[in-house]
Image 1 (spheres, rainbow, N blue to C red):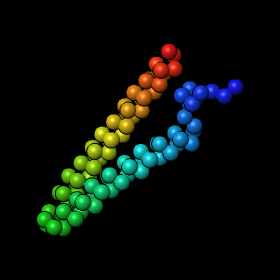
Image 2 (spheres, rainbow, N blue to C red):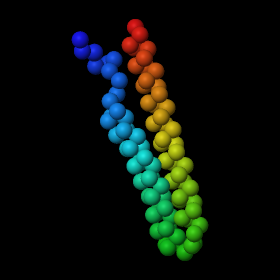
Image 3 (cartoon, rainbow, N blue to C red):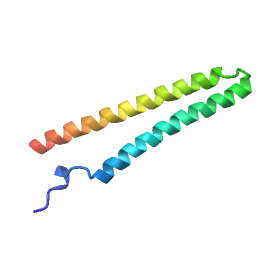
Length: 86
């Protein structure tokens, strides 16, 4: 007998895609921060200062996005488990 769609666990491929997307997003945000910092350093003539600041900002933003995504995923799992028990 087939399980209802709401009771199925996410497939491993779906989970792999989700975490791969998170890693790609993290790398893109950090790379954007570094690239922006290098451009600002050239524009403002402040050798490594803006690169360092923008790199650290990119790291902080990417960590925030990862934590937010993880908490949202955890919340969805709790909601689904409550829904399945009733």
